[in-house]
Image (tube, rainbow, N blue to C red; front, side):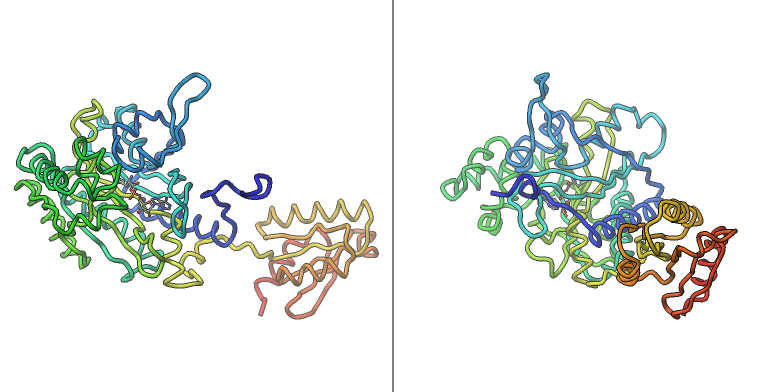
Amino acid sequence: MSDPLTQPVRGFRDQLPPESERTAALEHLARQVFALYGIGEVRLPTLESRELFIKTTGETTDIVEKEMFAFSDAGGRHLAMRPEGTPGTVRAFLDKHLNQQGGACKLFYVGSMFRAERPQKGRYREFGQIGIELFGNPHPAADVEAILALKDLFDRAGLAGRLTLRLNNLGCDESPECRPRFRERLREYLKSREAELCESCRRRLDRNPLRCLDCKGDAEKLTGGAPRLEPCVPCRDHVAQVSAFLGDHGLPHTYPDPALVRGLDYYTRTVFEFQAEGIGSQNAIAGGGRYDSLIASMGGPATPAVGWALGVERTLLAVAAADPEARLLRALAPERKPAVFVALQSQDPRAEAEGMRLMASLRAAGLRTAGGLFAASLKSQMKEAGRQGAPVCIILGDEEIKKEPPSCIVKDMLRSQQSEVPLTQVPEAVRRRLETAP
Ligand code: HAM
């Protein structure tokens, strides 16, 4: 049992520096890439109606059946903490009539998702996703644009050449020859092996046999002999074109990859996943695909769409496996090491007030400032300045503060030199020292 006062709930975690800084840097990088693709941000609610996920993610998916944090509020409303971002984005698209704005609508989101899965390395109950959804373009060019945006982001994070891209075709429900026929053949096959299926697969057999293909228990033993989807001609041509375009862009990928079925119900045609080496068994760092029927199935205007989401923690594990220092991300994180440390020679209310004013004016001048440990001796304040690695230290001495105008000691910690400077000129003096620091 974890201690509720000192430990987070199972599967939930605190993120502290440097991980929290790497997360922020990855998000920053994503925003830069999305600007290149003209993708705007949607900030989604954390809570949605449970019904939304049942109708979109899919009633028979593991996510909805087993993994949702769902509850009823005091008003009896059935709610769920979002397990993924696509349903909320589509709901916002419909709610705000974004289809009526003309042209394509491109949105991205950043935030926590919640799934009550068994926690392990790379699998948490609250995890970060960065995702995009591109609405309105039925052409394979949109699938490729989505995948290239993801690849650009991974390249910039330091993962170039370290990932595997898997691509598959899940067909459509429009043509009876496509997924409907496959569904029937699969159902027959699974029925013939019903005794080998787990309990949830047996339940899903009649309602949605496709879900048995991504069952954590049964998938491997079943996929070998299971019938394969033979997509209808338009579906086949669509994904073949996606594959050809990816080839044009020099993006190696496995296609078709029949084992790639994805765990969500809304996909049509293209599905894809990026996998990383060296991060353990939870190696799918991003996944997505096309979902051309979803919006119409929610009562909206028929709108083609394609998107993906990456897992932030898994991406950071992959970045760390590629470069433990995460140099590319670190370069984007704001520097926190203080440039200047303010210390006091002895406790005196006037000097303390001057010290606090000085720290505020240094920060106002854009200098990272630490100090203010005025209850401690000067010796331990200086020790702390050294521990924090501040290149410049200001000492408000008893003598100097009483002068007219009041002054202080500016100490260059790297050169062990010091000089007396009027308080009003300190920010400028600190800046000069930093500019000429060895
Ligand atoms: P997903 O494959 O379920 O797709 O999740 C996307 C990514 O989120 C995964 O590849 C993985 O990196 C990360 N992830 C999922 N579950 C966990 C977990 N328990 N702990 C840590 N990371 C996790 C979707 O969510 C779709 N909405 C993607 C999409 C957008 N498709 C179309 N548009």
